[in-house]
Image 1 (cartoon, rainbow, N blue to C red):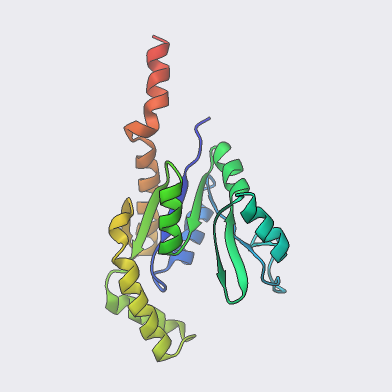
Image 2: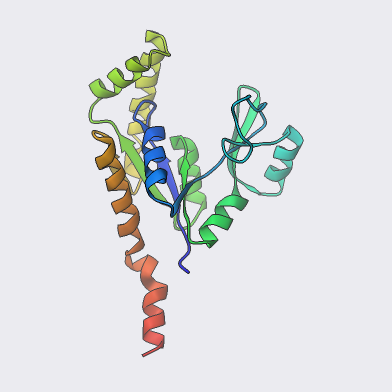
Length: 202
């Protein structure tokens, strides 16, 4: 069985990452979304192992000390991180695992892990991104402006990713991501073991 890939998936706020991933995972059972761990309290509607792995601070820091977190950060007095064990289990089963992550954490994972496939999602334009953020009606004008400024910083790092997809149409975007994952598996570096096997059994 071929091993699955770890896929780092980043993009600015408002670009539609959650919607893209929901549709991708619903349409492809060979892809799973990495589940983060957190020390914040579980909300009433959340499920353990589905929304997050909920850990005490001691449990979380123990995993950090044992190098069982792929990456982690502290935000608003709570820790958030990516446990390694589920990713290794799934990839060993041949499942591709997508890690939705902001650009700093994404670059850390890319630099530390071999064979990572990285995808950055772009909006068609800043005007579209601004409209999407405003249509949420959850943030003030100042917060929207802050998110747009942050988006410029994040987009400036897009060249560090393997592939860029543009979310101008959700179905086309999902199709592009599926095509990227399939094509990447056919690269020579990822087919070398297969080639060596054919050559060894002539």
